[in-house]
Image 1 (cartoon, rainbow, N blue to C red):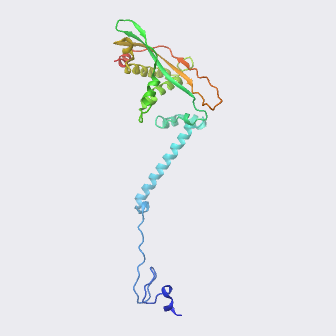
Image 2 (cartoon, rainbow, N blue to C red):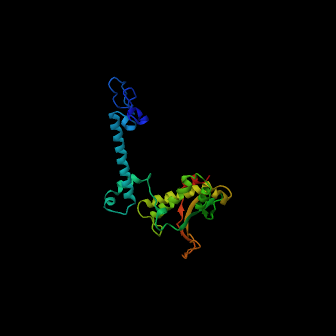
Amino acid sequence: MDAYDGGSDARHGPDGPAEPGVPAAPGGPAVPPPPTEPPAGVAALSLPYRIGVALALAVVAVGVCVHVGMMFLHVAPPNTVTREHGKAVDDWIYPEFEQNWKLFAPNPLQQNISVHVRAEVRDGEGGTLTTGWYDLSAEDGRAIDGNLLPSHTQQNELRRAWDFFLATHDSENRPVGLRGSLSESYLRRIVVLRLGRDDAVRSATGGVGTIERVQVRSRTSNVPPPEWSREKVSTTPAYRELPWWPVPEDEAGGGVR
């Protein structure tokens, strides 16, 4: 059997086509090599641009590492680094990257806290009267319930103001540190504006009135355990009443319309 009997598996003779990339036999046609694909991605850039991309990636990587390190130091227990560079860590975190881990805490808060306010109002005839308690937290809850895009004010303004007050006062409602008076002013302005927005003074006096003093209190109640739980907790609410705060004239005018 010779090469001509090998069928399609036999090598072609001098007149047959040559395999791609294999030099043709002497006197035969030259077969060009297969075309190579052009480089893609960063490899297609010129050297200066590749250097620029590498530097940009290095800067991003360094920034990510610094941010992750700052976040770790912020949520980590107090240590030597945070005691030495705590201010730098706080400057990096606040206010954009503040963390609140209560949702993921091993023992999350199991209390409902609402903030109430009442006012002492001077009516148009020179007399004074005291309004009933207004549940400002319940108002925020009604505004948020069913709202797909609740505002930051409805979600956090009152809650954060109350947390700010608790963090700067002792159990006797005495300010601790220089931020105590600031937290009182902040909370007082919020409740006065809420009273004016809700026309609480107008409805209490039947007309024009001026807020002279306000009093704030909190109502704290434990969340009842589920039916299958054996845990026993008291559901009786506890109240914390703050002293009466006089309202400056400019604030009373801004809060009452």
